[in-house]
Structures are given as C-alpha cells and as structure tokens.
Amino acid sequence: MNAAPNNSNNYSRPKPWMEMAAILVDVATGRKPADTIIRNGKWVNVYSGEIIAGTDIAIVDGRIAYVGENADHCVGNDTELLNADGRYLVPGLCDAHMHVESGMVTVTEFTRAVIPHGTTTMFIDPHEIANVLGMPGVRLMHDEAEAMPINVHVQMPSCIPSAPGLEVGGAELGPADIAEAMTWPNIIGLGEVMDFPGVAGNTPRMLGEIAATMATGKTVGGHYASPDLGPEFHGYVAGGPEDDHEGTRVIDAISRVRQGMRSMLRLGSAWYDVAEQVKAITEHGLDPRNFILCTDDSHSGTLVHDGHMNRVVRHAIQQGLKPITAIQMATLNTAQHFRLERELGSIAPGRIADILIVSDLPTMAIDQVFGRGKLIAENGNLNIDIPAWSYPESAKNTVKLGKKLTAVDFDIAAPTGANKVKANVIGVVENQAPTRALISELAVRDGMVEMDSVNDVCQIALVERHRATGDVVNGFVSGFGYNVPCAMASSVAHDCHHMIVVGTSKEDMALAANRLGEVGGGVVIFAGGKELAMVEMSIAGLMSEERAEVVAAKADKLVAAMADCGCTLNNAYMQHSLLALVVIPEIRISDQGIIDVRKFEKIDLLV
Image 1 (cartoon, helix red, strand yellow):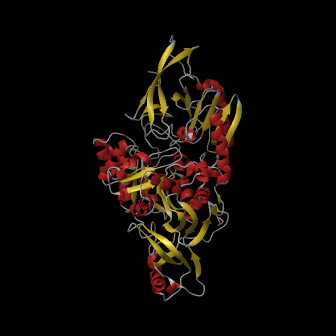
Image 2 (tube, one colour):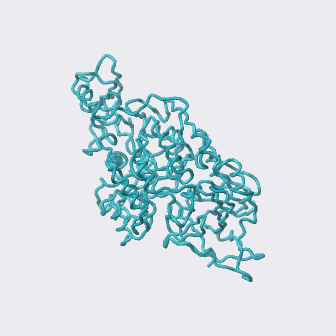
Image 3 (cartoon, rainbow, N blue to C red):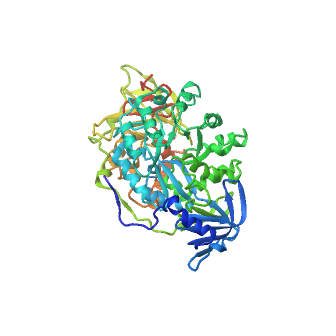
C-alpha cells in the first residue's frame, strides 16, 4: 500500500555529511562560495551554553559550513546575503515524541501548521494508524513523512495492541514486524513501549521487539505510566527503554534520569506535565542534559492558535529554566538521544541548516524559519508550497458498526430487585492522562442503572468498529460536567481506536455513534437530538483530508459545543480520546470490559 504526493517539492534532505565533507571544508576556508550567509546574529550556542553576538553563518547545499565572527571569506558572486540585525540565531526546534494523528490531520497538514512555529524536526509514533491498519498504515505515514520539507522521523509502533488480552484492536504486530520496519529508510527507532508489565514480566513479544531495535543501534522509546517506582519500574528500565514521557511528579523525572533514562517533559493540548517535573532541575539541581521537551498530543486548534514546540519552550522558561537550557532541551538533547547529533539540534558546522531567527528569546518570538538552508516561514506564515498527499481508498471507510445502534444498546441492567447499585466509575483528571478509580452509588429505574447528573456521573460506551461485530461495552465516567441531554462520539480512542461515546442521553449516544458510521469516522456532538458540531476524519477514522486551518475551525466549534453542554474541562476532547487507553492507570474501558490498569485485569462494572 503506497501513497503518492500530488506533485513534488524541492526540499529534499541534504546529502550525507561524508558526501559533502569536501565542499563544506572548501566553503569554510573560503575556497568556494556559500549559497547563503546569515549575518550579524546572536548565536545561541547549545553546546557551550553561550549567546555570542556578531555571528555569521555560511550555508551550502542545505548544511552549515561555517559559524563565526565574519564570513566575508565565504561570499561569492551568487551568494545570498541575509541580515539577522542582531536577533538571536536559534537551532530549529525538535519534538521528541508526538502523534500526528492527535492533530486530526495528515503528516503534511501537521507539518504546514508547525513550521511557522519553529519546529523543523519531529519524531512521530504512528501507533494510532497502526492499531487500525497495521503495517500498511505505518508505511503510508512513513512515506509521507519522508517527503516533507523538514525532518520527520518515524518510530515504529511497539504495542499493537497496547495490552494483549485486555483489548482487541484492528491489527496486531510482533517482533518480526519490528525487525522488518527497522530496515525502512525513515525508521529512527521503536515507539513508546506501553506494555510495561510485559517488559517487567519478560514477555517474548516485548523483549523480542526491543532486541530487534537494539540490533540496529536505534533508540527504544519508553512509556512507564505507573506511579510505582519499585521493582517493576527497575525491571522495566533493565529491559531497555531509553526515555519516558509519562511522568507527572518531580520524583518521576528524578527517578528516570537517575536510572540512565531521558526524562521527556510534555506539554500537549491536555497534558501539563512540565511545571511539576522541571523542578528536578530548578529546585533539585539535576543536570539538564538528560531532560527533553515534547508535546505527545497536540490538537489542531492548539497548533493553529497557540503554537507547537515554541509554546513548550516558552512555558518551560516561564517555570524558571534559563532560556538557553530550555532551548537545549528542545534541540541538542533531543538530537543526542536519537543518535542524530551530527545532523540536528545545533548551529554548528556540518549540521543541517535548520535555523530560527528570533527577536525575543524568553517569549520565543520567531521571525523567520530556515529549513535545510531555505527560508520556509516568515512572521508566522508558511511561505513555501507543500503538496497535498493522497491516501488510498484502502485507508478509508474503516468504521464498521455492524448494525444501526439504538438507545437500548446503551442500557445497563441492574441486579434483579435492586433499587440502588454501586458502580466503578472512570474519573477524569483535568490536564493529565491518568484517571481516578471512583465508586458511585447510582439509582435503578425499571431495572436499569441510571446516570447521576447531579454528581456528574454520565455514561460511557465503547462501540466495536473494526470487525462490524455490533458489540457495545457500557460503563460510567465522571468529570465532563455535562448538564443537558447530549452525547459526544469519537472514532479516536487511544490506542485500540474503537468508538468512544460519552453522554447523558442514550438517544443522543445512538445518534452520535450512527453519524460517525455514516461519514467514516471523526468526532461529533449531539444535544437534544440535533447535531451541534463535527470533525470528519475519513483516513482510518483518525485524520481529516482537509487543511489544518479548516480542521482547527471545526475543532473550535466542537469545543464550544461541549462548553454549551456544560463541559468545563480544558481540551476535553483529548481527555475523551484517552478513556480507552488501558496502559495508563487507574481504570479504563475496552472492548473487553472495564479494566483496572493498576492490576492489569478486567473488573465488574457493578461492585
């Protein structure tokens, strides 16, 4: 299965350093002219930790040949001369861990959205599409990523499904698949190893995948979501994962770095984990070299309105980091972690010429973005054309409900004769990925367990959508604050990507689910029988075919509709999409039932 762009671009990756060494030396010494020289900037040197005024940069064939006080000796008749006018010269920003699908758009559209914000390198883990389409889906995104005008490296998804035995998704991958993917040209390593009990328990699948990655010398991504830092944590680290972005406490960051891992601090659309964990540096004095900034999941609205890695760096500075330290954590530290220090993450000879001209460092006010030596964005606007990318029909029409759903499909029967019951309830935690395990007493009417709107307990359902079984698993969730009859359905449900429906009205739940079946996936909200907002996502039920700005506008309407229904959560859609992620405590819903992630076992809905 191969995708192809509608037309080509002229922003291919520079030739390898060893093939360019002679010309780099010639330009640096003045024997040959540079293509471009950026003059009179303040060099943000992430190696020395200095800011050096009066610096020139000479670029040839997409790589940096010379950085120093005066590049006049590199000037030729055709050299383009640009003046930084005393502004800061900053390395292009790197996002160390992220999922393009969370932006609701394709790799192409995500790239278009983030370049003006100074992101020139991304390390993407396409485990969302992998859970729907398997290896062919990963290859589609791999090939699209390789065609981008910036550096988009792919980590091979490791946990498809994320927790064997606790969920059944649309695909299943194992060590042989990982070994094959490691031969693909744009695979940089293994994506986040979410099955931490599998690693700590020495399961053949997880240790086999890690071994296949290590055999190629590539990076093994981590994902240890448990707060337990005892023997299981130590077993996980011993198993090989090299980084982790799931920490939420300062002790999480400290513990990971002490054990030789890189601690990735994330600020996504709904995950606010930097402020607490950065205290490991600002208050506990840990060496910042092994801390990395990332986003993990960024909604399209965040990308268009608030920024990307520039937003994360700015936020880290606001938490007390020196600007140059925060920049190191989004550039050099990331490049070193992925064994790409000689390619990315700094302004130094031989490196790809990914350079930002920044007028104010603490606020990351980015005036110009150079990618591979070319000016690709200016004053917040993209100034190059990135051709649209076409996905084949085989990547669409993946939402298969098997039947038309009705309100009855969302009934939860009570034990015979009961007037009240106690139920396990998923408790949403604002701005964090973990949930709380709650127990609520709920009323029974006509033999069916009722929701409790007064105490913010509504229903959640997982609707099987890969094999058209018609199965529905029902449960309860608290934290959304809906106070009118409504429902929201999404075909994005990390990581199994069945359909998640949350609502206060069973009739609206049925309407929302059926509507996504009609359009091939996305997210939609109904209230009182009427559709309020929808983002169509036809590619694997995860990504839209529309431009990022269009998707962002639709997402804004969705957020507004949720607020009109009483929801006050920050970026509630992101919280909604994680309610089936059975590798993050405390409890979740899956196609197998209600899962206690603290014990990795299925539990009864009714206590």
